[in-house]
Amino acid sequence: MAAAQGNRTMRVLGLLLLLGAAGGAHHWWGMRAEAAAQARLASGPNGFVEVMMPPGTRPGTVVVLAPVNCPSEAARRADALAAALSRQGIPTVRSSRYEVDLVDPTPAQIAAVQQAATVMRGEIPAVFLDGAGAANPTLAEVVAEYRRTRR
Image 1 (cartoon, rainbow, N blue to C red):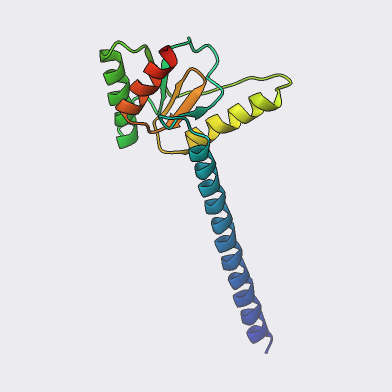
Image 2 (image 1 turned 90 degrees about the vertical axis):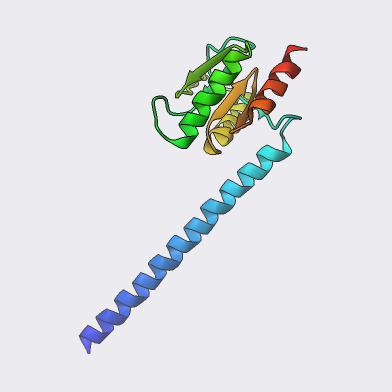
């Protein structure tokens, strides 16, 4: 009888663990979808949203973020995008790092860093230009954003 009670307890615990994992996954997916929807709502004409630029980035320079020297499709896309932008004479930096170091940040800076994080959680490459960023934009979108910011 004690063995049957132990088996029943283990099944209930297993079911609770499974339900907790499913609930956690549902919550995580909902947060991800909400962040993507917010980024789309706040985006500009070329799909770029306001972000905190990586420190030291020169104005007018496109920063293409994705793993460097990586054989993944996304990294190859980033390499191709950076090369195409450079061929068009657009200043471009290819990197795999985004770091900010803010002391006593303002609410606007916090929001801009959060937007940058949202962009980087999207499909790579993440592309940044003059305070705006987008996840996996097309070459045409990046060129249009570059031209828009040069006016």
